[in-house]
Structures are given as C-alpha cells and as structure tokens.
Length: 318
Image (tube, rainbow, N blue to C red; front, side, top):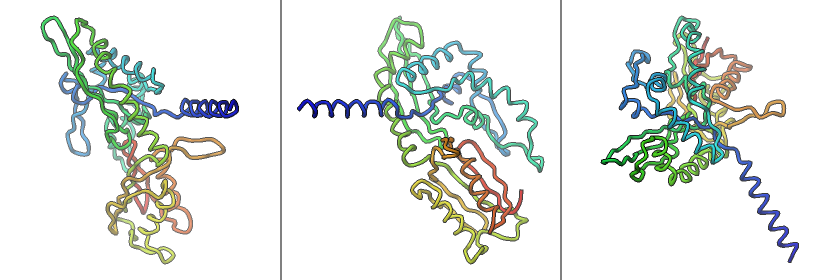
C-alpha cells in the first residue's frame, strides 16, 4: 500500500512539473482601435492607394497618463499567471529607431513596402497573441466604475481566441488602474485558460498562415505547365501536403496564373543543428521558394511577406 501511495505521489508530482514547464504564448497588450478612436489617437496612411485609419500609439502614450498605467496593470496580472509579455512602449521605441531605414527602403523596381504600420508593430513585437484592451470610466455621483473589454487576437490571423468583458462594482476610488483590476480579476483565469488552449492547439496542430502563388506576366510558363509529367500546381499542392502539420491546408482558389492556400498549418519550430528555431511564415515560404528554384524545376521566383501571417511567391523572376 505504501508503494502504491508513493507511486501515485510521484505521478502527480510529474504531472505538476510538466504543467509548470508547459510553454506559454508570448503576449503584448495594446489599446484597442475603438479606444484610440474614442480618444482621437488615430492617423491615416496610404495602403496601395486606399486611405486607412490606424491607431497612433505614440501620441496615445505621450498624451494619456492612464494608458501606460492600465497596460502595466494588465501586464502584471498576466505575469502573475506565468505569461511572458512584450512591453509595448519598448517595442514602439524599437520601431521608431527603424523608421528612417524603412522610409528609405525600396524594392529592386523602386516600389515601396506595402506593410501597414500595425503590421510592422506586430513584426517587431514577435508576440504570439495581441491583447486589445478597451475601457470606459462610468461616473455615478461620487462613485466610479469601469466597463472593459479584452480581446486576445492571434497575431498571425487576427482571429479572436479569447475574450473578457464586464463592468466592475462602483467604487470611491479615482484611479483607473485600480478600477480596472477590480473589474477584470474575476474574468482573468477564464481569459488566460482560453489563451493557453489556443496556444496548445497551435503547438499540437501548427500555426495558421496564408500562402499565395502568383506568376509574373513576363514568364512563359504557368501553373498548368508540366514538369516531369506533372502540372506545376499539382507539384506545389503535393509539397504543401508533405510540409504542413498533418497535411492540413485548404486550396481556396487555383487558376493557371495563381493559387491561394489558406488555413495552412505550419510547425511552431524547426530543428536545426540540434536547436529549436522559431518558424514563421517567411521561413516556411522560403523552403517552398527554394524547392521551386532547385533542380529539377529551376523556376526563379521572388518571395514577399505582408504582416506576420501572409507570404506570396511570384514565379518567373525576381
């Protein structure tokens, strides 16, 4: 009986150690678009001819004293639950230091980068999940309460993977971070459990990305051209089936000039020289690019990315 009890105790200890060592997603907390719009912290930029309004995070940090305190409070609550965090203010400083170089960067044809400022922010942060926070202070006589909404968004797909919303109890406290903490505490465990469940699914089934294949007009071949008796489009699909987690992807569209692969599940890491290296969309798409460049296909191509979760390979030249 003592041996059985000892074995059970060792088993429970092993489970607890494994749970403690479970890999956590990296997070970054940001004010939501809605909050920035309500407080007039927005700017416009040109995205391939279309005017797009996006949050002006720098102005928000410089103008709103509560913003840094609120983000620090959420960071603290997440850190208490073992979730690693990227500090948004530090990421913005890194992004700003790169802005002069980015402004001068052009393609070989003189085209400017089409990445949006938000895409660049995510790229620098390299966070698995972005937590958007919206809050509003309600005043009733001498008491205040706070209504909040937190959304956990997969940074590669922008899909919502966790949410928490509610209104805290009225309080005489005038400090927004204190009101926010009181409001969110009862929701935090469910919120973090949802984040962890999503990350566990990614760890087991791969990260979801989008891969596009297009051809230059000047290229004499197309996706219906045959190489070694097989259509190029079929060759690419076969490669995707062999190089996605459990062969999971969807061919959403396919013509002689383009292919669109969505819900492409890529591994979070790849083994290289005995080390685990984080896999992202560009690194994954580069493998397909090299496969097409090498023998027996010898297809020159150009790889571009947009944001964290989308890559396009242009066939027929650089």
